[in-house]
Length: 107
Length: 184
Image (cartoon, rainbow over all chains, first blue to last red; front, top):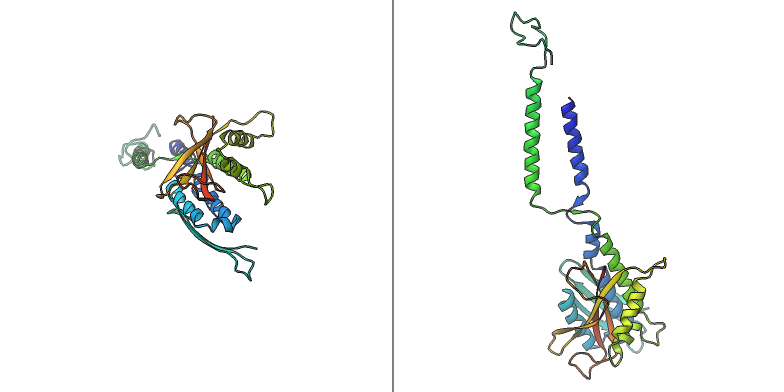
């Protein structure tokens, strides 16, 4: 009986030992989710829509996103017409794992 | 084990008819052999996968958040009529790497204690050329990269009212500031 109890403890020790190792850590998942990338993209587009509406800036953001961050970023900005006060932005982000779409309207 | 044990079925056995523990050894041997086989199978299957300790990447996560916050601070203007610090650093006649270095180190190494943290960085910025390729230009660094650093990358988009790369008369332009940061 002592033999069986010893082996049981041995197995319990192995289970406790294995409980601390994982295939993917929680913090790793947090790092892989592009929270800061998305906040950065939406931030730069919506901070000044007159600037981000510029076609050269738009191409800059799309091309550099693809080359340096492996992410497809497409956006379009609608500036307010003469009788309106709101600008709108349609932002699309996709890095192959995470896809994010936002329709943003200014205050 | 009963020292007086023996074959209980034999008539001349003084313990005939009573249970004894002769078989226990064989039972234990069988269980041990089974456990060893299960252990072996477990080790073989386990050998193909690489596991990491569950708390491995927490410091990376914190470092990335710290770097993002520092760049966010540096790209926030004091009011709507002036440029942010990053815009001033990149938008001047020459890109001011020294200013970026002192500001970034000061913000990222701040601690509540007197001594500073040991965060180092290597920063660059990327602009787009006319043919839609990109050029990455060093901005500044506090250490040379040796390849052995365990670095995380943080980035910040900056729209600067200045011509970059080979589009001389076109502005504003969007550039991507990339910072590798690590503790030494």
